[in-house]
Image (cartoon, rainbow, N blue to C red; front, top):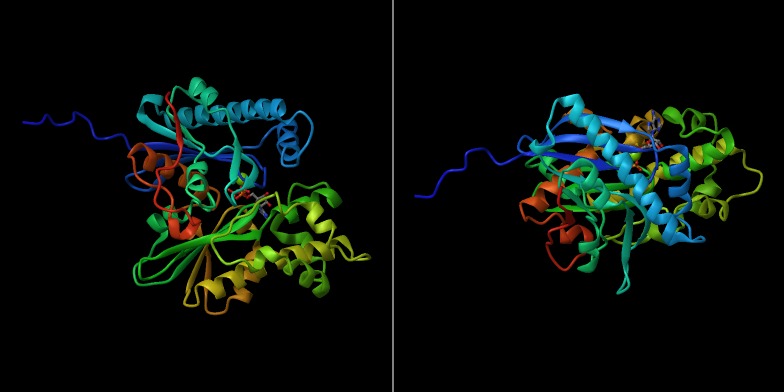
Length: 371
Ligand SMILES: Nc1ncnc2c1ncn2[C@@H]1O[C@H](COP(=O)(O)OP(=O)(O)OP(=O)(O)O)[C@@H](O)[C@H]1O
Ligand SMILES: [Mg+2]
């Protein structure tokens, strides 16, 4: 007779996410059986690390050394957050099956035979400091299989937000926006739309010294420039069919600068950027999921009331709501997705959806640094 396991399989995972906005790290303790977050912590990057990570998005001097130091800095920041999560919840590290750690994207060039993506994180250092199995480098395998390596969250969105018999879309408004399409017939789609917060953040930082435009209040003082909006919307990326993914490689202040119309007031540019963020989502959704009745928004941009209002205006017949109304606060969804992906790795199950990323097939994603 086979002996029965003495304990239930370990279902606690930690997810660690730091996205393109470079606003810092979100960490969650995640119960993979209940698909529920038990605890959430956020920590900003130190200004020096943030500046260096931003600088490393652009080719520069002595990158190998600087990237290695930044990867150490990211690992230390992640390890601090893990310690906080364990302490806050009275959890022992032995109770955690694995950490799913995204790392900080500094390059995303998925296309072609030479495709690659780089998330800075010293996984060995994170495993050393936490004593917990680290699953990281979650995007490379999908790219090796011919995919975009992004977005990776649609499978998780399907697991958490999928509603039988109804077309539902899930929208993440991070630095970049991405849509997951959860069709009523069980198919799942997904792709990056384009800039959500990264250009608005950069523009307000330059003109007002603020990290972001709270609730779109500054944008609300300006007027949308139809001419600038048309120029921005002419970017060929927006016309690409899925699969498609993007990042700061394309959408940075230099991209905006090259398209600016002289004489526009800074607040009018901000108003136009907010409109751009809403338009590219609305047009993508209308193009790819005509029957959508519900749009569930998450990511920091879902806290921007003006952006959410413009999405509602542009999408008549679609109920636009926050993921919080479905049980997951907006700043926990992405981190929970990476905890879920770590669970998929540990249980030797695929994390990607070939229909979303364009990969040749289902793949187990990630690389392991044992704790
Ligand atoms: N109250 C708010 N009003 C307006 N914008 C907000 C507010 N709170 C957060 N944000 C925006 O959300 C951003 C952070 O969002 P988030 O952490 O989801 O993005 P991210 O780190 O780029 O993640 P990812 O790349 O994984 O999607 C901030 O940089 C800011 O632009
Ligand atoms: Mg963030």
